[in-house]
Length: 459
Image 1 (tube, one colour):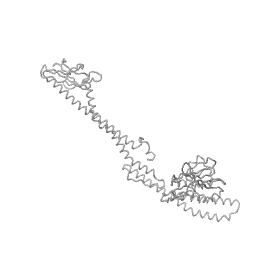
Image 2 (tube, one colour):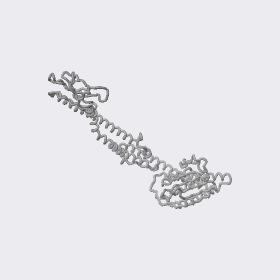
Image 3 (cartoon, one colour):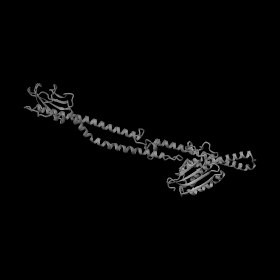
Image 4 (cartoon, helix red, strand yellow):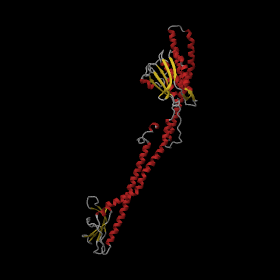
């Protein structure tokens, strides 16, 4: 999981665990709310129907048992549909003649079977009715009573009752979802913390991740990652030891070979033998330089220890680098100069900074043509301090710009003598202490400009 890059994306990404968890919880809460509303509607519907049925029965019995018979009060359709008023019908004892009714518009015959029933007077809205037909009386001339109530009114009343009961749940649902969001975000914070710890790892010295804040569910994953880091550290250490041991073992015989070649120079006859001897000597010198760079590179790849950070005057350091490399410049008949227009200070180990500038100036001297020019400038660009190393060599093809910092990469057609490690060493040392190296071909003519951006507090 690359939490540093992917964990900062939009929260609704379908592969996000937080998104999936929130979607499931929200779905479950909404489903539970809908199920609760449906259950309330059914439960309160039965309760309302039973209560109204009981009232219909009592009304019918009160009319059927009165002597003399009571006459129902007239009413209108609004009372029947809007307020659910009972419509009372008084029938003759034989059930054939309607003697009185509270709403003559409703024509519903006396039901054959006493008790509760449902009738429908048409297909329009409000045509469904609940009916209670009182059983025949004990006297032969006792009238029959039938009571009706609109079914739509009953459903509306049950729905209103269910909505009122479910209103607190509906109002609390957004609050519950907000609490869920906070809880899920808090639970995923530990995952983001682990991702930040992974992203902050130094590739040269990876450290184990702490399990103190890790949830139990992902502790095995973090433990497996720590085991992988342990194996990576072991592989890095083995590689560094191999390079260091090999370089150390090669230094002594290469130094001996160089000494023997120097002693042999006086015995080499002039002519073609001297030319071949010079080539041999250049190859040995190049091999010695490569061994030294391998040792330097292995030290840089080692875990960063307590390197003493000190206050380094960049101008003084650059002048020392130029002076030390003056011998190489004279050998190649290259005019090297330094120009400093600002004062800059960097807090870092002096040897590390010296490695950055030495490798860049050495690279410029090697690629500048004989009789060429190398300029080292300390100045301000775009509001911050920079160091420019400029040469008038062939430059770098645009296709190779992105690879020149790779170890052992050499630009096709480059002059002999380089190892392909100088720029890699310079960049490693620069990045370790907050510097940034930028390479580009010069716009004012042939050659390359290597610009080192110093830290913002350097100027």
